[in-house]
Amino acid sequence: MAKGYWIARVDVRDAERYKDYVTAAKPAFEKYGAVFLARGGAFQKLEGTVRARNVVIEFPSLQAAIDCYNSPEYQIAAAIRQEVADAEMVVVEGA
Image (cartoon, rainbow, N blue to C red):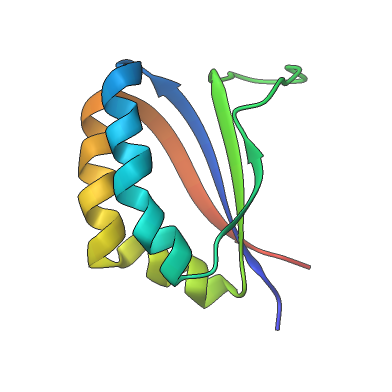
């Protein structure tokens, strides 16, 4: 079974409140087997528009990645994130 990946590009507007998002999201990530492959490290723009924070999260499957996002646990966290950050997020199936 192919793995699933969240790819998120984020500009945080309120760093203190973003910590609340991180804390709130943790139970969902643990429940769905999330593994962080990249989390806000250094990056180099190659093309297009960039955001300050880039995150890649691996899940055991595409369905687990989708279920995590749609879970009640993550939706609580998402509401916080949407108040304090601007983001684009996609779910991608691995090869």
